[in-house]
Every structure is written in C-alpha cells, then in structure tokens.
Length: 455
Image (cartoon, rainbow, N blue to C red):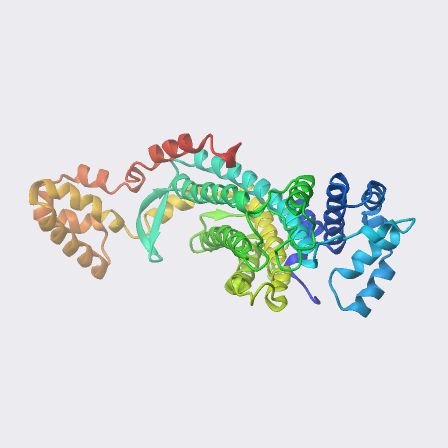
C-alpha cells in the first residue's frame, strides 16, 4: 500500500490494540499457529502410540518459528506453489535424526490451516472484547453524567422532541451489550478445530481417529466439531456478520459524532490535543478527524461483509477458489474493526459535551418543537383530535409569519381561555419535556450492571 493510509494514522500507530491485532495476523503468527497444530497432533499421536514418542518430542521442540529456515520455506513456496507444504518441509528439516518424517502424519492441509486460523480468531476476539469493555465503561460514565443533560432529539434529520444526551448514549450502550452477548454465543460454535483428513472421513488417521482429533484439539484449547466442517463455512460467516454488526453500530455512532460536531450544531467535540492540526491551510480548524477516520475504515469493512456469504459456496468437499477468500476477508475485518474501536475508544473516553449549545439548539425553532406538549395540555379540554387541529393551525401560522410559538398561542382565544401565559411558558420550557429519560437511563444502567460487557 502506498501513500497515506487510514491504517497508519498517528493515533492508530500508538494504539496497543491495533498493533496487537496486526501481530495476530502477521506472517510469523500465522505460521506459528500451523506449527502449534502440527505439534499438538504429534503429541496426541504419540500418546496413542501411532508415532514414536521421541518423534513427537522433537517435533514439539522444533515447532517454533525461530527454528524455521525462512529462506528455505520461501524457496519451497516458489517451487511448490502450495500454502502449507513449505512450512511442513521446514519443520521436517528442523527436526534431527530424521524424526521429521512423522510431521503432518495423516492430516490434510485444510486441517492445519483451518485449525490455525481459528486459533488466530480466538486471539483476535479477545482484543475485540477488551476494546468493547473499555468503550462500554466510557459510555456508562457519559450516561450517568448526562442523564439529565437536555438536548434536541432529531427524527428524519430534523428537530423532533427533547431528549437527554445520557438517553442517547444509553441506547448506544444497549447495542454494545447485545453485541457482546452475540460474541459469547458465537464463541461456542466458532472455537472448534479440524482433524479429519483429506475429505473429512478420517480415513488416514487410523482406527484411533476420533481419539487423535479429541486429544489434538484439547492440546490447543479448542472444541471437537460434531462432524467435518471443511465444506461448511457457516461458522466463519456468522463470525463475519457479528463483526459487521459491531462495525455498523460504530459507523452510526461515529457518524453522529461528526454531525453533532458541525459548527452549525456544535453540541459535542472529540478530544483535540495540544499541537494537533486540523488543516494545513486553515489554522482555525479543529476537525473531528478521529470520528471521521472511524467512519472511513468502517465503510471499507462493509465491502468485505458484502461478499462474505460466498465462502459457503463450496463445490463438493473442498473448493480452493472459495476457501481461500477467508484468508483475506476475515483477517481484514478484524484489523479494520480494531482500527474503528481504537478511534471510538479515544473519542468517547474524553468527549466534550457542550451543554450550553445543546440548550441553545433546543430553542432554535422558537418553541414549535413543544407542539406535542401543548396539544396534550389542550386535549383535556378539547379532546385530542380537536386539540391537534388547533395546535397545527397555530404552528403553521407561526412558522409562515415568522412568529414565536408563544406569540401565536397567546393570540388564539381557543388557547388563551384554557391556558394562562404562565402555563404556556412552562409548557414551552424544552428542558422539562424530556419525558422519563433520566429515569429510563437509571433503570437501564441497573439492568445491565451485571452484564458480561461491564465485568
């Protein structure tokens, strides 16, 4: 990749989680996971007296990247054009006394690669879970602090009715709580290995095939599948959809932060450190670059999600043209999501909330956003439908004549004979018409205080 990349943003370069995710999906770790599977297999087979114990001991001892002759492996790759055989030969070469002959005994390439990538996914998911926990804590803090902070709620892009910022944030948090539950549910199905041979029948694994599979996967901390999943990729599709769902939530949150940062709205501001520059030519700019970066990467992730379901379309017992798509799609999704989460953790952990501007924006429409409240106050006297007509007529009149809502209400005798000016003033106080938002926030936080995402 050339030029400036969103993946190389200074913030991201300093992000532990993003760097760790890169490490998980780097070439060295990928090969190491293959070696881990080969070592676990050898140990299991030795325990079952299928291969000599001294062979298993030597294989396990040398099954480390540091013992691999990478020049030899790369040369083998150019010659064989095979993804795994060069590493198998590299491990064989590293073993002394010809004990490497027992490497990769009875298994197939897909066994090793599938099991290895599951181990990578297991590591990567721990980072995703950790980042979600940290973001959830930031959202809890925002929800508690701003459960009473009135702001304008907007529907169809326009001002609707007052809400509180804490209520908005609580809804974001509720999504993350469900995403975390989805991860926990997914993990029960995802963390399985594959030791089944060339077409899933275990034909080459001896009469102890089931024991070989069980012991190998136990050595790796993985579960045993109920049958071969070589041509059944639903687990990985589910993984992608869970990652994509999390990504969609943060796409929304980051986009909302961008909108609320617009000068014309100016209700929040993401952290802007000393020395940070918004523009090379406009010195006054304090661009919401972090949220913008999150949206950019999030949008890119969606492209992978769009074609993910194609990995299920295996022809017969294995289909390389479909299978190998996973090696690109899913690691990239993990990497991109880690970037999004790193950005959002940074933005949400120190978000500036501009209460005064929120209050000012509540009064942008000169009281007309309280039309619903006035309607219900009049409905006790006129009935709901009649009250709606009265308020509608006054709202349209005031907007067209550029008068305040209070002015047109007081001028309407149908209103003034029911509501006194003091009552109208009280009804038009937007800060007191946030419904049960503060109470709902408290109730919600009480409900999820023991959720896994907050532990």
